[in-house]
Image (tube, rainbow, N blue to C red; front, side):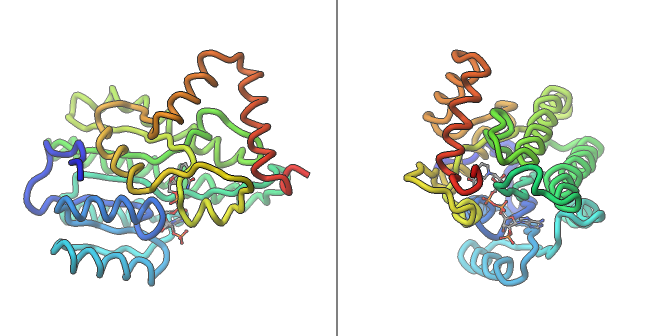
Amino acid sequence: MQAANLGIIMKEGQWALIAGSAEGLGEAFTTLLAAQGFNLILADRQEEPLKKIADKIERKNGIKTVRLRIDLADDSAWETCMNAARAVDCRILVYNAAMSEVKPFLDHKAENLDRFIKVNNRTAILLVRAFAGHLRDSGKPGRILLMSSLAGLIAPVFVAPYAASKAFITALARSLFYELRPYNIGISVCCAGIIDTPKFLESKAEGSIRRADPAAVAQYALRMCGKKAVCIPGWMNRLNYFFLSRILHASLSSYFVNRAMRKMYPTVSR
Ligand SMILES: NC(=O)c1ccc[n+]([C@@H]2O[C@H](COP(=O)([O-])OP(=O)(O)OC[C@H]3O[C@@H](n4cnc5c(N)ncnc54)[C@H](OP(=O)(O)O)[C@@H]3O)[C@@H](O)[C@H]2O)c1
């Protein structure tokens, strides 16, 4: 397994916090970091999957875990995470969890949109602020990885709240990449394409769709963390994004993206 780009802060017993750690891409981050010897603070909302993954990596990798069963939409979720991080001198944060839904914008209820903002943005920005502040004050280097999506860059139809929330954290990381560098804090945002996770499968997309392996995405994202402000896993995704953003006119680019979206979700587009 290729080592993540976290070597400079890796030492015996180092801690990392993963927000959204039990399933899907979160499970891949957890498995990868545990295999590299990190002790882990695992934050997730469901008791069973959290216990299952924590027990497994403790047994297999001989590391320690702290389990936080929280809903990242809660107002105090960032403080709960931060208290746990401070208690063990944690220096790596992966904000992975997100709310996502494919449906027409006008079908969303106000509470639902509020939840998008809370999980994907509010808790993320407050935790990043507290975590980076803690690193700066302690004078120690650290890494922050925010999981985003190509949707935040290309804004397809039927995922407006998701795409908008992902654009928010993408801009956050881009801006902070240079601002936090003097403190030896590396922050990156990973804008992934489609990944083979239970959450994606739940969306019931139609057709034969290329889905990235979660382990490969997690490995790439950790390797790039602190090196580049924005990273896109998969050469095909990078190539597609290059064409959509640099070669095609914006309206043509949206036309192709939206056509693909309507094909994947024919029942939503009706
Ligand atoms: N899957 C894709 O195709 C894809 C593509 C591009 C980017 N991404 C990004 O990659 C990240 C991971 O995606 P994913 O597909 O693995 O799905 P996910 O829904 O983010 O699930 C990852 C983990 O986070 C947990 N989680 C979700 N919402 C939570 C909350 N409010 N509080 C606490 N824990 C919560 C999930 O638990 P539950 O099982 O209970 O929900 C799961 O264990 C997200 O940021 C997503 O936007 C995914």
